[in-house]
Length: 407
Image 1 (cartoon, rainbow, N blue to C red):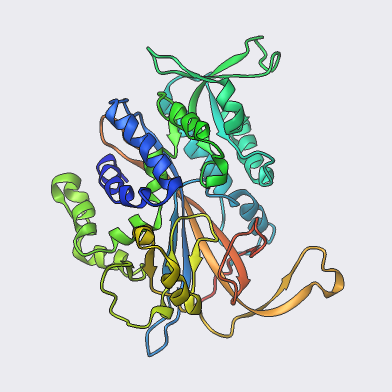
Image 2 (image 1 turned 135 degrees about the horizontal axis):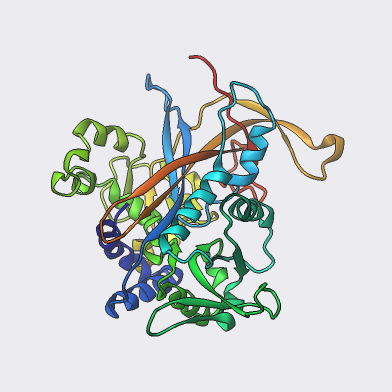
């Protein structure tokens, strides 16, 4: 991940922003920052790359294929870690997601260079996923001695200020909250656990608050650029011929760390084929490919629903959608699913599929161009095979654990 890559992909996002209001609002704030030559400090990315087993048959081996690459509010790491570590079996791989996420945040805080500054958690109103976030908060305090401030976009619209000379971001807190009696704190970095869905921005003023935070010298996690780089349109562009070679195979940029052609092919093999809707698609059967728009769940169209959807899609909106080859889930994997409140009848045996997420972080964008990064843990979610969505909080799937076996 580097600045040049982010700058280039924003050109692809511009087209989506013309027909998708959410993407367009964020893109226009990024463009304003760019046009005003606002200096960009380091950036922190906390990522989760999600995979499904692909079993196409016809003699092909089962392999892992990437579903999506999450660049904002990658959640359930804390709950997944604690669920996995309950088993204490040697065949269960260790999972240190909480410590890893906190380590990434702490590295960014340290790079900012003001020890008594705080990390800002931007959270949703009436947050339901607070427990997952609290584990990270406690890890930051107990292991790294770093305090945080939790506020919503609505609260930040009143409490956040950026010094015009130093670009320091300060947050006003309730009187008496701080031990020294002050009512505002300097923010070292902004960690977004909100801002990934249009409902987090009910009015343009909420987007303006996002711009204000981004205009400061506080390290963003993620920046607007990095958030938009996680969109499906960017993922589709990366599958185009020559794109990986440009970013990872250029020795003038990477020196001896350049990817070989074999490594690039291996990386590319983890992706399903993707196309823009107006590109030629080899398979003439439109029901074999889901259509996807933005991240966050509930924005996908699958199988038999595709033809009618395409017929109803306005021409001007086609640029915001992509076609992605459908991942063929393995057949015959059964398990019991238990729903809350189901009582003794709540356990249902069903054919299931599991989605594996791999967490990691990267700190990049400094003057020296160096990237600090680390893989930190995993998340496994299991759902009924017939479900097209996979969110835990939305009730589509449940947290699960990985069991390693000898092949």
